[in-house]
Length: 239
Ligand code: PGA
Image 1 (cartoon, rainbow, N blue to C red):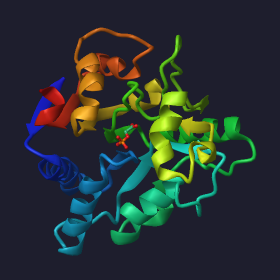
Image 2: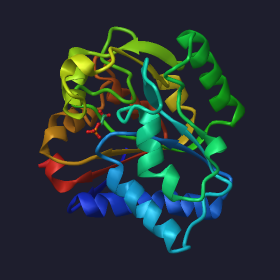
Image 3: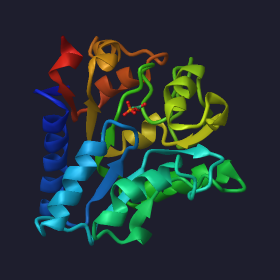
Image 4: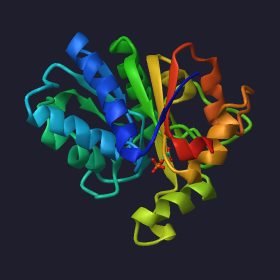
């Protein structure tokens, strides 16, 4: 795993944005794998800035997001579709029809997961997949378990994740209990993976990931098997 240490959140965000910008310039019709959460917000703001200045165009880019709560309406301000529209898509020149997030309103969530997996395959995989890391080691909503699923699937959220995400909802009771998420195999369809982590609260998770062991109860350790992974983190993550 390549490791890039940044002095602060701003530098980490700029670095992530530059990696995406280089790819988009080199391959304007690339497929970006995107993530939600607090970690990539600064990176999305930096990309919006580049696009507004005319330095970057997303007009031929396709995006696929990692996951979505289930069930949830896209108009709900906690849905990942809402997050992506507000943090990025509404402010850049991407064609919204080419932005993909699992459908939190699908009547048949299993069929929706199948459709999503096929979509990623049909796109020819992902050029660069951005990931955050959960304090419990989850990537996307691949939660610690005795088995990890390869394909996009419906999953129950762990109490840890419900508690970590409750800060965005009126209360922990309002956090949806399920999600639709890319599986480990879907994520591994990415040619390049960039995992971002900022702040001391991610120290234990990142150090467990860097131990070079594989453990399904710590899904981020799976990334040690992928040939092209870069960790971009702030210095305090590695203290
Ligand atoms: P965060 O979430 O960026 O809000 O810390 C990361 C994750 O849980 O994957």
